[in-house]
Image 1: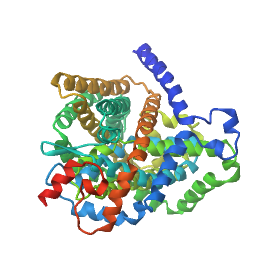
Image 2: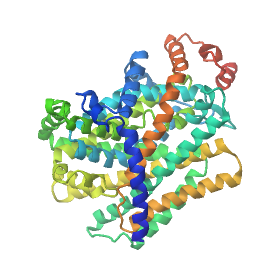
Image 3: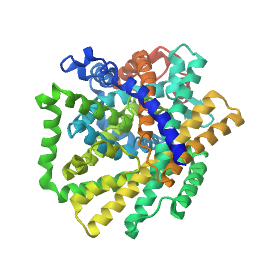
Image 4: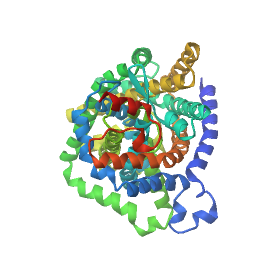
Length: 511
């Protein structure tokens, strides 16, 4: 078994080299990295943050101006076809709010320092406009299939590139590859969270190859099959319940920690801003490290610009394409500005990350390291036990809901390639095998930290595919936004954007 995992680690190591190339280019060239300040910015950083700035300026910071409207859409959402904007929001949040909100943030802070959290905030603020753009685009070019809406990256990619079917297939394959690279970590974290919960309750260390882990493995696979293979409406019935529960529990738990440690709050903000802006950091390598970690972990968490959230966005029965754009912008805010910041509070205020050598925080399954930070703020006793239990429950739910989302939209992409039942079955089996690999890694007591590298590679690879399409399709988003802000009551149709949008023309006729 050890030799097998060593071989997997070796393969992941090769992928890491390619991943680092995508993330670091051209900062890995001495002549470029020697340029003051600019030398800290890789092409990936410029593309991600730069696109967010561009869309924010062109749209007049719509993510701020229409924030309240997005909340209004959530409060009043209904659906005649497909799912409601609220259900779409919960589904996308299920995919956004994952273990990366805990492990990714602790890793970013441990490697890049508290200043990395500031860059997560900045990338999220501008990333909200990117999420608005890609979600609006997904709504504009969504398609109707039976009594549901489908769409997203593969659909608007094909439409924008002159209806090329091969483009739609390639982008669908890209999403499937992206999901397959992310599955092992989510399977690993789902089962390891169960172990952490059991250890918290019993106060004993439970071997990873015990019956508890094997039973958890079997239950996980059965539940994923039962829910994910039942269609998007079945998935949303689960996420509609789990997402609010896990979000409320996590937010309430961490807020309680903050309130009981309120004297540390000034130090938290001082650490974040001083580490982000001190001169020696801006003109030295520390700035680049904090910046890259902040943006990289921010992207892993909120997914703005990846195109991966465009499928739940397209599934919504929105009154106007821009309505869903506003809703998805709120999703980025919730994920990074709220959830990730709360995690940052715990990690930074506890100081526990400072003596851990950085990279250890990035190991998969090391949820106890985050729980240890919480323990510094709670002390021993019942309070610590309760907080540890709640955090572990949330962590497990984060991973599980991510699995549901990935499985559901992998199948949609598979159907986009071919509706042949044999092909769909093969994709389903492949997904389950990859998930099982992640779980078996946990059961074997291994800790493949390199699985993070797979996720990093998947994130930036699909972002490089999606962002150019956002620029190509931005003119349609702009026209839709002008019509949206005019608010004259006229229906959104092909005439508004100057391109054929059959779903919206049909909807206008019914009204």
